[in-house]
Amino acid sequence: MNNKIIVNPVKINDPEYSAWFETLRNRYKSTQIKAVVKVNTEMLEFYWSLGRDIAEKKAEERWGSGVIERLSSDFKSAFPGQKGFSTTNLWYIKKWFLFYSRDLEKLHQLGGEFFCVPWRHHIEIITKCGDVDEAFFYIRKTIENNLSRSALQDVLTIKLYETSGKALTNFKNTLGEIRGNLANEMLKDPYKFDFLTMNPGYDEETLEESLTHEITKLLLELGKGFAFVGRQVELVVSGTSYHIDMLFYHIHLKCYVVVELKVVPFKPEFVGKLNFYVTAVDKLLKRSDDNPTIGLLICKSKDDTKVEWSFEGLQKPLGVAVYDINISDVKSALPTNEEIEKGLDIEKNS
Image 1 (cartoon, helix red, strand yellow):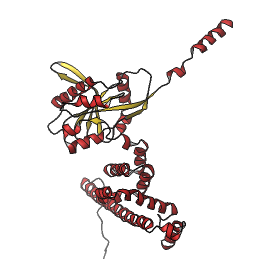
Image 2: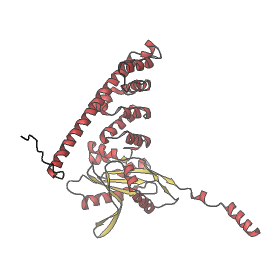
Image 3: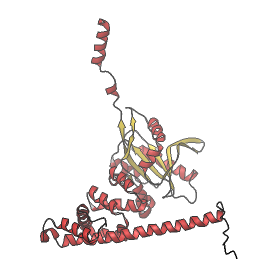
Image 4: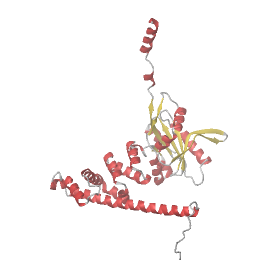
């Protein structure tokens, strides 16, 4: 009697099987992520209690300056092979607790998400931030955007906290407090266009062309959520053509963003033109499920009072910011008058 079990071959390309396995894969991946987050959370909660103990017991005063080294050695002996108990890390744990214990109210507002951020991210933040407000800004950015450690290092390096939400806007009056705050946070001031090097005397068209050519870098500078729609987008109003410098769509805010570029200091009349373009986009391009269009003027410099007064009475959401850019040192590449005269003398006498 043959008891051999016959197994039917699996149809490798069967779409139903593929879909089922994809579901299983995603389910397992989700389980893995939850397990990592749970372990990370419990470890950070222990680190917090350890940092609190070291600080509140005044361990160094009670047991001497070498107590941290002793504590590290004892932990390693008790839990051989377990990482996280080096002397350096224990000092970071104490510093971490002391840093955030200065404002426990804000820590409570953030809730349990604080302990979901990886430990190495926390170290990056407390070593590069000057105060709790700045640190919480990067904590929230890490959580909202699921930043990797290298991505967090990038936003710390460009000092995103110093520029994010700093543009002058009328968003609170035109979009309401909640949506206005969200929209305001997406804008920067200044915008760093240092990935470009322009010749002295460059005009708006040249700047616009250069930014379009480096659209990937521009989108990174604008921030998450911006999608490029086009340059010199035509709007026809009562038979007359108008062209927007650059048009974007913000995926998270679900609205168009009109960007006008000026290579000169701010002038009040710039706001009137931008207000007209925003109105035209609302009338001609905005769909029923889109939110109100936002206008952003980026100019060489600005006077805050002139900007704020220019917003008076306007109902469209507008913002004004400035930009930084590299200017090539063309003069250094050209010969001086003395060098030219010297060259002519040499040629004459040769």
